Amino acid sequence: MVTKKRFKAVGALAASALLLAVSACSQGSSTKQPDSGGQSSGPATIKIAYQQWGPGTTMKTFLAGVKSEYEAANPGSTVEILPIVASENDYYTKLQLMMRSPNTAPDVVYEDTFLINSDITAGYLRPLDEYIGKWDQWGQFQDSAKGAAKALDGKTYGIPDGTDTRALWYNKEIFAKAGLPADWQPKTWDDVLSAARTIKAKVPGVTPFNMYSGKPMGEGSAMQGFEMLLYGTKDSLYNNDQQKWVVGSQGFKDSLNFVKTVFSEGIGPSPKQALDPNMGSKVGTELLPEGKLGIALDGSWIYGNWQKTGAKPWPEWTKVMGQTAMPTQDGSGKGKVSLSGGWTWAIPAKAKNPDAAWNLIKTLQTPKNAAKYATDGAQIAVRKDVAEDASYKSSSEATKFFTDLVSVTVYRPAYAEYPKVSNEIITAMEAVMTGQSSVDDAAKNYDEAVEGIVGKDKTTSGQ
Image: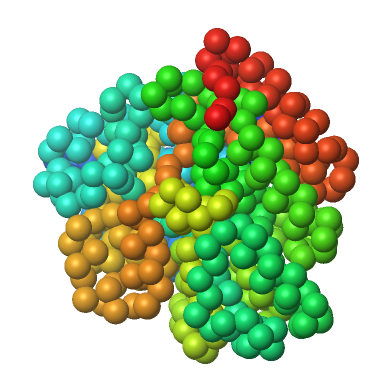
């Protein structure tokens, strides 16, 4: 589920083709809308866009069910599902291209929370406060989830459908072969690296450890990889007290050094493997279930692949896979770290049927539908009633583990500049992992790039 480069050159031609295709099919759309109260005043075609990547079909199946439900309740209306087949990097770019014009803008879009402020700045999204004020379900949403969908202007631009946390997944069978404990509880970065080195030495043919790194994995590299390290140091990405971006930090260099160690010692995937844009899908559907990966720094949602409704059903995963928190650098602070993100359903500023779009979002987020997606999609529930739903709570032991990590989780600084800053993190990671740059030079280049993005007066030195 989750998180990338704002405007990536790769895929631009495909994005333009998509833009033309959507424009062509939008010419016959109905512009009749239901009123804000939810009663249809005439038939409407509501277009909903989401990311489809890899073999997973959870969202596709979920949306097909919602489409049938909505159309049955609103005779004459049509829900047109627009899957954008692209990696996350290219999904963001293609979606933004679609939202630029009223001829191509969908009515509902699947929007990553970290892009909300930058997309508002670009004029892509519509505030939902007028609708939310008349909706009796908004009180069911957790305050943290509401905050993730709220922009700097104080308005809300998306309805959350779930959140996530991140930790270490490890294969107990590989650990047994390596002589490592089944109940693994690393306390420091060195403990993680030590376990990976032991696997390399004692279990040949297995990738000991995976963390995402490099441009093809985009925000997965920045958030699930680098920031899971950085927020375990004494430094951070953004100083909330000073409201400035942090540069020149030792924590940044230490995090890059961890990346260098993983790739230079061969305890991670080869750079070629790591730079495969399908790596995120392969970890969940091939490497872990096929016993080819010892430890994965990854998200709470990954076990959704292994459920009956997932891309790679794997009933044995509950016995084979363990989960443990990612430790801080030296065990200090809270001792463990997690990052959270999440996605929302939003309405583009240039949507043709905003009222109908809102009614569709309400259908997406009924308690029944929200519980179904949270369970099938291995999401951490953001609705209070769903969090107490018996089927959701009993869906997996991993659900409780990852939900408990919310108490230590960190959220990205979702300001308009973040996507550009994130891209510079990824650039620094890739330069180090491929040996093209030293840690010091990569960190220096990052600092200079951030100062250029936000202005030197909006930066501060790390600890």
